[in-house]
Length: 537
Image (cartoon, rainbow, N blue to C red):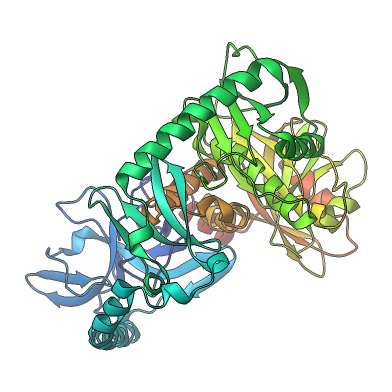
């Protein structure tokens, strides 16, 4: 498991880092935030999970200490079969991972004797699994080769092949329902299918590289033809974000037109006829929505316009019931949010409120009281949205908040609601809600703020990782984490303990005015120790 430093940490002070990789599974899992405590005068112990920087590496690593000798310190990942090839010196070890965070939930990471017992149990479990697997391997391969089980699967339930566009290239993928069970390896020129799903697939019927190239040419030709036609002939919906990006959104067919129209109504998008001239400042992106063309080619689920010559083609699911409509609207909005993420923004599970031109986010998991708190705000406060907020960064490094629709409302009725998405406000505070008996505000340092933000951002961005490989998902998590680190360093964060009847907005107003400076020395020291979060890669 390797890490990429985002900032150096203060010597002797606790710091945070994001876990990325699989070498410490299941002890640590993405996208947890690690709490790292420097050893200082404490002794290094066998069984500790150590955060260290090998002399031959340029990025830190987190593995468990397995041996301490005069010659050096040996380490191994809990999910690795062999010890690391290098020996560490005490100066190489920057600290011990003592806990892992997911939002406000802190999980202790065992070290010392308990850590040794944990590591030993994980090794025995892995050896048992590897001992049983070869006994079943021959039978599995025989059943897969002859396709006996695949022939018995009814046609509607068989896996289907789609072409997915990611990171500038097209890739064959095999889907069973909404789950990816296989991918075509461009380098080995063969299919890689997860066990046990290969039993349900007739490998002889799967497309190969030559089929992929032919399909790509057909899709790209049709895509460009459709986009050029729509730019000059049809009505377009337009969206301008505070990060300088300009979107034009068009429908490629009649059913798609209905979806785009409802997206435009919900987000209060402007309408224009014909092509839009590129702005002098910013970037022009084009989103084409098609339902009845190339339905077997799901190659643009959440792509980046910047990797596709500024053009994104999204193919939503056909159907007119409210469940499918809600899913399609979420997909289209995530295309916009994914591009904002690439520009330094992030989608946060939180309500957006505004007072005197200043925006604040009330962040919390579902059911914690975002909507109730938003409804309780008195004038001159205004609630701009009650569920999700898109935060973007402008060219000067300032953060702006766009209200984002509550798409779940479209499951409850035809109208669903509307939100003025283009009404961005400067973001000056993030308040994490916590139900309490009386109102009280607690300031948190950037390190703790990042751990809370990761949970809020993960809840709104889960669909972004659909149909991505592990490497692509890891890159997405790292990009989002780096954006959250940058956000936490600029925008103050607080935990707002909120009662059912108190005037909690007064606590927010005092914080915005700088009235919450009377903290204890212990709180100040803790915040300083958290002031330099690190990002993982």
